[in-house]
Length: 135
Image 1: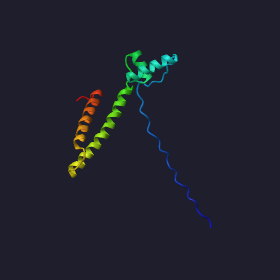
Image 2: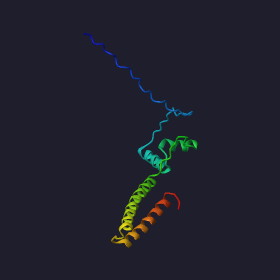
Image 3: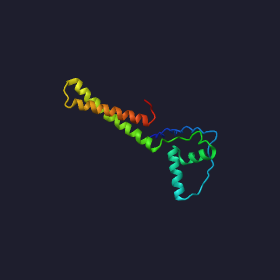
Image 4: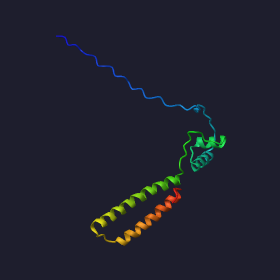
């Protein structure tokens, strides 16, 4: 007996959508030679300004970093944001303790918890002010 072998159906390969191109795509490259110290100084100034090195140099030379230049927050700002997140976790723990007190009416050291809550609020307000998120 002969068996009819059915060929598997061809599956079409998914073609990824084409990336949108900008009108003024940057296709040219400029190389600049510099010493290690100069490179470190340029990188440091770019970081302080919140730009990549290329965007920083374009900004200096042309007065504009370009439409797609992404401003990176300075390291200090990143650290402050991270600390604000940790402070939120601490505040969440304090809220859980307060909820336990409200349910049972018993919690040792309640005045200390209130003092900690006031301190946390003060720290949060100081961080928000440092981050420029006003209050």
